Amino acid sequence: MRIVIALGGNALLRRSDPMTTTVQRGNARIAAEAIAPLAAEHSLVVVHGNGPQVGLLSLQAAAYQGAEPYPLDVLDAGTQGMIGYLLQQELRSLLPPEHQVATLLTMITVDPDDPAFADPAKFVGPVYDWAVADALRVAKGWEFRRDGDSWRRVVPSPEPRQILEILPIRWLLDRGAVVICAGGGGIPTTRPSEDSGTLLGVEAVIDKDLAGELLAEEVRADLFLMATDVDGVYLRWGTPDRTRLSRVTARDLAAHAFAAGSMGPKVEAAVRFVTRTGGRAAIGSLGDITGIVAGTAGTSVVGRKDGAG
Image (tube, one colour):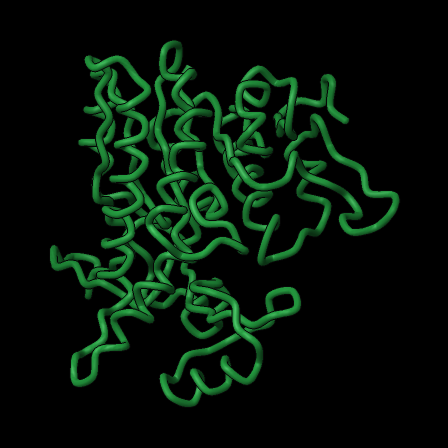
């Protein structure tokens, strides 16, 4: 079975964690220990988020007086290499020496007229109290939105359109490699015109779940699995009568509303994948990944009503 696994940002840097290499390496090993056992029986692609990391790199780049800050597309590329390296190293330490693992810098095109550019909504970087966030807003021109009890920077998150490195990704998969790609949703790029071969980077961060869904379509995955910090999709989340869905059709799931900053993109990506391919999508905890693959844990999103609920 071919599986695309999308790791949430919490897989490498949880909200309460200090933003250090040591912490990220430890979390990368936890993720690798969950993923590695699947490699013996399945063809694997790993996608990862980069919201905390790209925000941190942006802050570091902006700290140099007199230096031009790096644009987000360059920072996205930097996080692909950094996070991919940590995951690749940890997976190689757990897999047999002959089992190849490859990290591929991945560019993904977006529409320059995407309405997301006028409505930044993607959280990046650390959390702040309002006084610090407001000072950064004034000093750097950044936009902020409330995230729980704190404030975080938001940037545009346009729809992914085309994965430019899809052929080498397929080539590696066909030869048995575990492929880490489209990290952070891919490096966002546009073309000046439809018939132009020129590529331009843009100031944005593509949602990694939507990019992972497009990737899952393009590599003809049997399962698109989104690993997060909760054990599935809940109705009435945050209330005493919340209910976890174990198996649900894409059509039924699409009828419910979910928070745009958390479960919303995952549900949208799951519904897209099932609707477009007829395959299975799943959402659940990284620690339950074996059960999610088997269909005994997490929330499975399917195309047929049989057994849904």
